[in-house]
Amino acid sequence: MSYRLTERLGLDPFDSYKLYQAMKLHFESDSYDAPKYNYKTNVKPQAFFKRRDKYYFAKLAKEYPKQDQLVEYFVSQFASGSKWVGDMINEEGEANYRQWKKLTESVGYEFQKDISNLCTKCEVEQLQFDDLLKVRDKQLPLAVTLYNRGEVSLTTIVILNKLTGFLHHANKSITETIVWPDLYRKFVKMEPFIKVDLNKMKKTVVNTFNIL
Image (cartoon, rainbow, N blue to C red; front, side):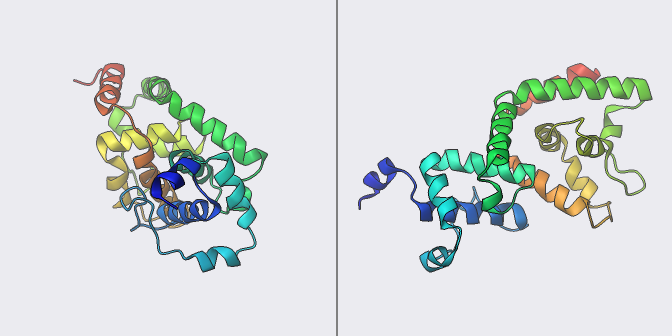
C-alpha cells in the first residue's frame, strides 16, 4: 500500500496503538519527547496483537482517523490523569476531550481571566507577582497550590512557566517526593501541546500587574 493511500485512509488500529504508546511514554518518562521524535517508538506488531484491548485502539482509529486529532485526544486524557486506554474510551473520556478542546480553543481568554484573578488575590493578600511563583520553605509555589485547588487552569501554569521558567527553579528546591514530581513532569510534558503567542501572554501579565 502506498504512503498516499495510507494517509488518505487514515490511521489503522496499530497506528493508534503506536501513538498511544508514544504519548504514554512521553507523559510518564523524563527523557522521551514524543513530538521531538515524531511519535516514534520501538513497539512491534506482535506486542499489539497479543493485547486484549485491541478493540479500543480500533475504535480510536475509527473515531479520530488523523494523527493530530488522536494526539489531541490522548493529551486531553493524560491531562485529566487517565493512563490506560480503557479508561479513555467512555463518557468520562469524551467529556475530558470536550473540556480540553474548550480550554485550548480559548486559552488566551482563560489565561487573561486567571491572571486577573491572581492579581486580585495578590492585592487582597498584599503579594507581588513573583510571590506566586516562588518556593518558600521548600513548599509548592502558590500558583501551583491554586492549580491543585482548581482555581488556576493547567494551561495558565504551563504558560507562566514558558514565560518565567519558575517550575524549573522550583524543581531545584522542592524536596517533597509524593506529589511534586508527577505534577512537575505533567506541566513540563504539556508544553509542546499548548501553543500561544508568548509576547501577547507576557503583555497580559505586565499590564494586569502593572509590572514596569
